[in-house]
Image 1 (tube, rainbow, N blue to C red):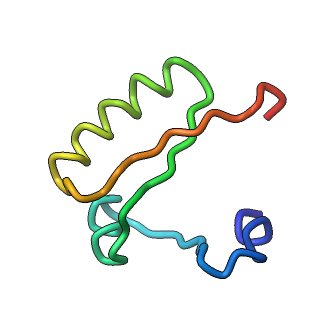
Image 2: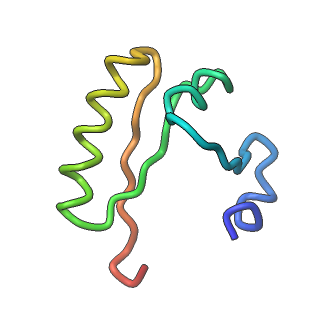
Length: 71
């Protein structure tokens, strides 16, 4: 579903991986991670992960997006 949604954007790829997100991002030369937040509890967890990821890869930003309630 994600691949279908971004198919018109040549600069966007959807890839699966196993292991640490840090290893995946660094291996792809990533500069930002987009993370979805559905609830306050998601924010608490993701905020902690973002802090750890920042210490492991300081050149990579984490961006949080919140979807509409209907999603």
